Each structure stands twice: as C-alpha cells, then as structure tokens.
Length: 322
Ligand SMILES: Cc1cc2nc3c(=O)[nH]c(=O)nc-3n(C[C@H](O)[C@H](O)[C@H](O)COP(=O)(O)OP(=O)(O)OC[C@H]3O[C@@H](n4cnc5c(N)ncnc54)[C@H](O)[C@@H]3O)c2cc1C
Image (spheres, rainbow, N blue to C red):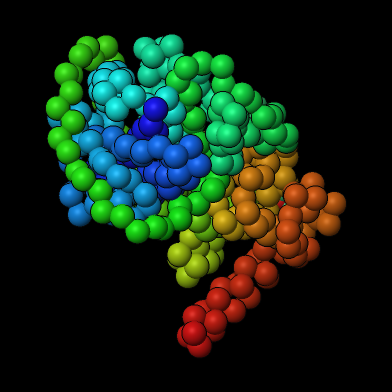
C-alpha cells in the first residue's frame, strides 16, 4: 500500500495546486503509515520538482515525454506507476488536468473516484472523504468501497504545508500506450501577468453594476495594487465587456481564493456557486438588499465609483507605509 499523487505541470512549471496535492498526499501517507510517491509530466526543471520534496514527496517519477495535453497517455503512465508502487490511494488536484486524467485512471484501474473533495481524508478505517455537493451548499462524507481510491481534491481547499525532505527524482520510463485524444492548443489568452484564476489567492471581480467596459480601469488598478486577478459575472463576459476566461460561477470557473472582492455584482445563486467557497468575501453594492451581502464577510453599501477609488488610495497609502 502507498499513496501516489499527480503533480500537475503546465508550460514546464509545477503548478501551485501540485504543492497542495503533494502536501495533502503526505498527510494521508503519514496518517496511514505508508510512503508517498509523486508523478509529474513534461519538462519541469529538476529544481522545480525538488521543491515538491519540501511538501513531503519521498520519490518523484518524471515522465518527460508526455505532457498535459495527452490525458490518455498520462493516465496510462499513472496506472503503470500506481501498479509498480502498489498505490491504493491516488490524489489528483481536480483542476483542468485532473478532471481530464482521473476518470480515465478510474476506469482503467476500476478504482472509485470522488471529485470535489475539500478536506483531509480519514484513513483510519478505509478511506472516507468530505466533498462539497449542490454547488457548495452542503457537504457529503463518502466512503470508498473500491480497492484503489482516487481523490479529486478541489484546488485551494487545504493549502500546502511545508516540511523537511529531499526526494529522489526518477525517470518514470513508462510505456506510452494509446493516445486516443491529444488536446490541441488553439488559442492562448493573455492574462497580462496575472495569476490564472484557478490558482489566484486574491480576486477582484466586477459585474453589471459597473455599467460598461470603459469603467474597468479602476478594477484593474485595484487588482494590480493588491496583486490580485480580475474576474467578472457572466453577463459581463456575455456582453464582451470582459474576456470569457474571467467568467466565474456555475457555468464559468469555480474558484476558492483567500479573498474575493465582488463589486457591482448582485450575488445570484449561479454566481455564488462558483465563488462561495472563497475564504473571505467582500461585497460592494449600492443596494443593501443585494443577495450577495448574505454571503459576505464584509460589506460596503455604496457606489462602486466612489468606493473603489477610495480603496485604491487606501491600498496605495498602506503599501507606501509598509
Ligand atoms: C443557467 C444559468 C447559469 C448561470 N451561470 C452564471 C455564472 O456562472 N456566473 C454568473 O455570474 N451568472 C450566471 N448566471 C446569471 C445570473 O443568474 C445573474 O443574472 C448574474 O450573475 C447577474 O450578474 P450581475 O450581478 O453582474 O448583474 P446584475 O444582476 O445586473 O446586478 C448588478 C448589481 O450591481 C449593483 N450596482 C448597480 N450599480 C452599482 C454601483 N454604481 N456600485 C455598486 N453596485 C452597483 C446592483 O445593485 C446589482 O446588485 C446564470 C444564469 C443561468 C440561468
């Protein structure tokens, strides 16, 4: 028995979610008194990979010839390594790559897969996980009854905890197997240096209350001062005021940042579905009855065009003095 974690990579870099997944796997391995193995794909630097050791990885298998556009080949390699190390628990961060790969591994290994896991697994008697259900409105505790359990961890659920360790990095040398689907990148969105939304810890988001695309300058300025990523409600991206990759909610991205600032967004249930797991929610809205205030940790009833410039000034002054 051992634990195997998929460390996601993109563009030759280890993703932030990978550190969390490895840290999560390390806790399970320690609770279960077993080893933690990690598998990574693509050309991440060995320095980057060694960084995973400080989150608990004992051994890292690297398959350089496969990358995250090849989910079937990744799944083949993971299945092979899982068999080699006798993995009975597999952890993947349930981001774009995890969502593509984990179901294939599940089918290949006849392993149960629970997606949307938001807390550490209880491995004292089988494997029990807590997952969010009904768009984050409730939680379910699920016990695996398969021999191998695949945990799809929602990114930014438990964070990554550093610990001492220097892993052995090995060439995975897996057989490539079939490649029934290879993803092809057709368009690359320019994020203007911002952290991608699924990885962002701070998010400044705005809605139709901003009246038009010409008013996003202050949103971008606030985000830039805070080091945050910009997001928006669905009508805003539908109206082409903002790019579609910023759309959060039930039909957009589901995110869990540490801070979500919602400006001129009503807080419709479909919007909340994608953001209500944020650690701290700040709402700025002219309407004191806006539903978003019910989900807010801090609320400002006020006009965005007055409040946001004041926030920008306050953030600038704070930065200048600290
Ligand atoms: C099947 C389905 C899926 C959907 N999926 C999504 C989704 O994924 N994401 C999503 O966002 N929506 C989604 N929607 C749409 C959702 O129901 C809402 O219509 C949408 O979220 C509203 O966007 P909004 O809050 O920006 O706009 P509005 O509802 O128009 O709200 C604007 C808010 O701004 C406030 N405001 C106005 N002026 C100011 C000002 N000067 N300063 C401060 N505040 C001001 C208003 O009081 C109001 O609360 C979905 C709908 C359906 C039916």
